Length: 390
Ligand code: ADP
Ligand code: MG
Image 1: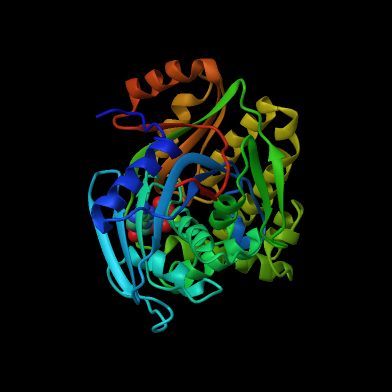
Image 2: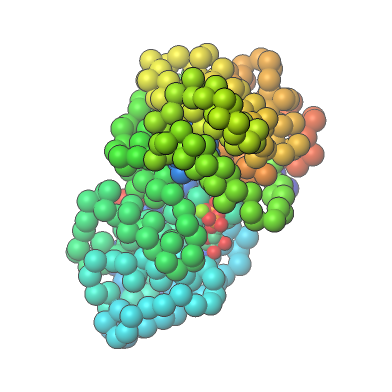
């Protein structure tokens, strides 16, 4: 098995989807849309503290092709990267309101159809995606926003990008039942080639930050581990951060300053709560700094902040794992690496490294010589969801 996943590209995915559509439904599709995956550069475990995140869209895509079928039913076929095919059908919203039900994956589609700001007549669609599922690269927002964009093309009803992202987030909350933040749907909707997106999770304002990748590349390394924890870690971190904010008399840790760590200590706050608060306060400041310097191509300082972010997530937030620590440690100090860190919620999933493009091959070999089964994705920041030629 190859250790590198290479994006198939829009043209190939559309061709595959169109051929499958014709073979399945016996006619040509009339509408096509696509949406990318994403990776977060910095700003981890601070979205729920009203901090900042800095994701970029990556060139792995979910493509949807389809058309009206003149029935009261929506029928969908999803072709996975493994070649496996999933099918589902449900009534058009003209017929009856939708509710979450099995199979689980269909809720990512149904939630979007249910939240679309217009009645949706019966349609047929084929989905083809090369965004790895469940790897932390947001295949979920990718399929949601791809379906929403497809529905815009189908119905002719469109909404603004912010509204679109919010409706897709609402869909994920209500149907699969995932209480996700706004980052994934924002970046998948608003991503821009050669840019990352600095999102203020308090005001929900977003700013495009130039990320020119002539000489640098973002190497995403999937650790291919996902530690099964009790599931209480994430809500526990949230609660600890809120406890710190409450002690300081603030609505969230967004308003806290470095000096407030000393205040928490004086207040006799729990040691773990203080560690979590320190991570949040410092990570917010790191993310703001990267947002300012990335456009100036200050990759050296950005890399330092990546390492600091990782160490803080590992030691203060305690959401890393031995495999992610090992991947970051292999890269620490290696030729051509500006910085590396875990990305996503933690306990497995992916690490990222900002590296010199010319060293990508050497760095992959270095990791392969020390880490048992990584998967690499070399990513450039890419465009968000859009209608495409069918
Ligand atoms: P991530 O978003 O990090 O990939 P999630 O657990 O949030 O992981 O979402 C993964 C789930 O989204 C899958 O288990 C599946 O139910 C659904 N999904 C994503 N992409 C597709 C697709 N192309 N076809 C069918 N289901 C998909
Ligand atoms: Mg997801």
